[in-house]
Image 1 (cartoon, rainbow, N blue to C red):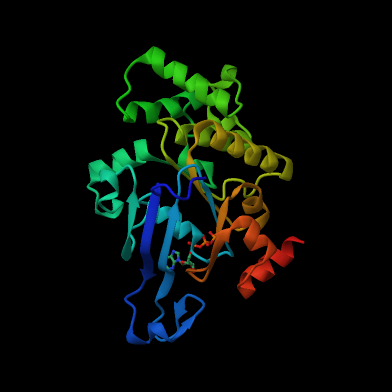
Image 2: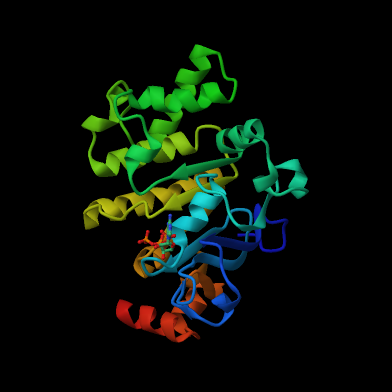
Length: 277
Ligand SMILES: Nc1ncnc2c1ncn2[C@@H]1O[C@H](COP(=O)(O)OP(=O)(O)OP(=O)(O)O)[C@@H](O)[C@H]1O
């Protein structure tokens, strides 16, 4: 992790609101919902930086806004306010949310990769594992079949899937294998940023441990920066250099993961940490 370098990702003032809002919203929120007008503030004024080679964990209970953050970054929803700058998009000079449709496709194909909790969202289940990865390579203008086969083989090897199975469809794979294919697809074009949204949730504990171990190896091998969302502090503890704690759409604590675990400041973080012991 290199905290002195230019961040790979800088988010400022990200707000996602469902509803029109009202003058009372500032004082009448019950959790993230305004009792006066019913508007839900899924994210409120969220700012963060992700540095080169860093794993930044985002932890919080259900409804705290974690998925909304990931969806906003991957253009799955349009934020109400805020900016997100990627170091590699227009040299950090413009927010990705101002990008055109073609630029957004380029950003998703070349600059970031996404791994969803539900592999159905990230994979074509009926296509072969190899085709899933090749689709990403083709989207990045690769045309040379031999080179693409080489890259597919390298990626499947990196996620420890036997290349003898690359012709099989992910629907025939176990949950852990599907996540591995998703990870290899997300890495296809060497993005600087990987978004991991609850990637081990729902997997058996032993499979979870293997996927987490794989993510650690991937980070070491490719030097990719990772934004890792999980409701499970144990997962965050295993992987994240720094951690952001979210509650009701807001950041309530941010710091080095070790520090947060040893000396949590916010009552909610204290509760989370104590539940780990
Ligand atoms: N379309 C919508 N309309 C209204 N409220 C919404 C909508 N989508 C999400 N929300 C609300 O936004 C808040 C944040 O949801 P989000 O899915 O980001 O939380 P989360 O932390 O990812 O939770 P989980 O771990 O359960 O997925 C929640 O209160 C949710 O009910």
